[in-house]
Length: 442
Image (cartoon, rainbow, N blue to C red; front, side):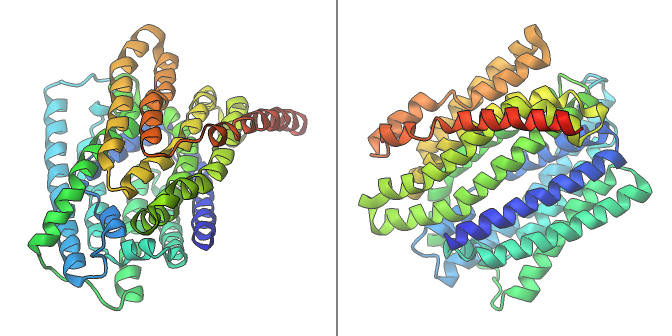
């Protein structure tokens, strides 16, 4: 509960800071810049996840996490991976440049923006900086020591945002967004390496540790690839179908829903996963009980918010943003429905805790296939509305298989699955009241 309070409070405050900075930046920069940065972030996230072997999850789950040999091997692999990602980003930028030169991308889409090949390798330097962070951060998560982690993240975020706003105020270019991200990573790495950690990692390779990393990571690697596609494939696909301005507006709706999803994900990965892993190692017979102790409060929150956003999406956008972003209103209402699917994200953490990441991979493959097959078809016949509906429905496409796996591992209780469903109506009611209050007051 202590770790959960720090994680929730810290990340809630973090998302509040992000929202305020987003409101400021949307008034300093034009929508096209957010559309371009959305693609840069998607490509960057793709490079990170396409090389992901679950190093952090491995430290949390492994019985060797207290051995220096193991931790130094993980850190060495982490640094080499960061440098490899930067090299790949340079090659990707060169590929995009030649695609633009030989008119292989439509002129009206985001991929034709001249700045794109330049921004990608510069933005990827944030990954290189983060790669030198010590394994202490993963150990802190394993031991549920969230207080220090949250404080460091907030300090880094605030300093990065201050620089970003300052540059945007005087320059009004997309480089303000890039500089903010780089500063956040740099400050975080400096604090952890020089102000917090007394014993730093050093370069070392142990064959047994490396074998464990690859054995655990092979399924995490696959799930990360398809996880990237399902979580970022919407912008990846839409980047080649709609204009930079339209993608910028869409990214605002994604930002708001994503802020909530990120809070839930942080709670799951930083609190629930370590607790479930501890239970799976020492008291596997209690896993069902611990699982539902986390599930019920998570369900209550996400179901309420799904109902709330369904009715208030347009009102929220009109209240927070200027008329250039009005179209994000209906997108936010629809995307809010996808929050219902977050109640099953804890199941993925259970499979990881049990040492069975392949089950999580199968579920993500189904969702990814659903979206990548149907989104282009829906866009062709029903435009952007149809594409957004496919994005929402893709989150629910793997539910039948998820239920089957839950029953197989004794993680299914019909009564507990249904008990929180009525909360969505409370969200709808509060949405109606919110809309009425806003209309009366403004």
